Structures are given as structure tokens and as C-alpha cells.
Amino acid sequence: VQLQASGGGLVQAGASLRISCAVSGRTVSSYHTAWFRQAPGKEREFVAQITWSGDIISYADSVKGRFTISRDNVKNTVYLQMNSLKPEDTAVYHCAARNRAATSYGYWGQGTQVTVSS
Image (tube, rainbow, N blue to C red; front, top):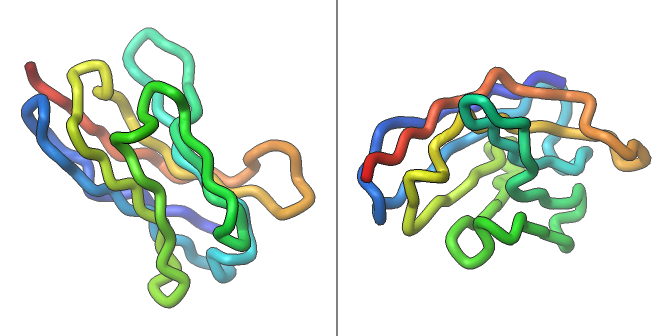
């Protein structure tokens, strides 16, 4: 499976942005999918995930209530809607996928830069 993230950019604090992850190779509903992010000088951190069935969604505490992960099975794409963006949300955002039985994410996209100015 291949993942291609897009939609990043430069926005002001308080703005909204939606980033996308196009999945190819197999249907997106075959995998658990997630978004991670990595800020300069920091370790990569989990942001949000959605299970293959779409019925279990979880978020990092830092984005809960502001970010929404969703999936379009027809377009084979996973989205991350980000509202009320803060400068601390600045990072490279990566999408990832794992097989249903896997315990870690083994498929990664190249990332898209999100920069939030104050």
C-alpha cells in the first residue's frame, strides 16, 4: 500500500485546514489508518486514528475537540480536519496505515508541512 499526504500550508492561529492522505494499492477500509506529526527537534507523536471498520476513533489529548479524522471509502482517502489551529500544531504531518492484526504502523506517507503563525 502507498500513502500520499497533501494539503498542508501556512495559516494563522485560529484558522482551519484540512489535510488529505490518498491510499493506493488496497482499499483504505482494509487498514487502520492514522495521522502522526513531528515538529522540529521533537519526536514523532500520535495525532488521531480510525479503525478499519471506522467505528473506533481516537485522538491525542492535545488535539481532542479541535481535530477530526475521517475517511472516504469511495475516494480511498483519509482526512484530518484541523480547526482552531495553534502555533504548537506546527509540524510535518504523516499519514500511516497498519494491517488489522498488526500492533504497529508499517506503512507511511511522505508527510505534509503545516505551519501555524501566531
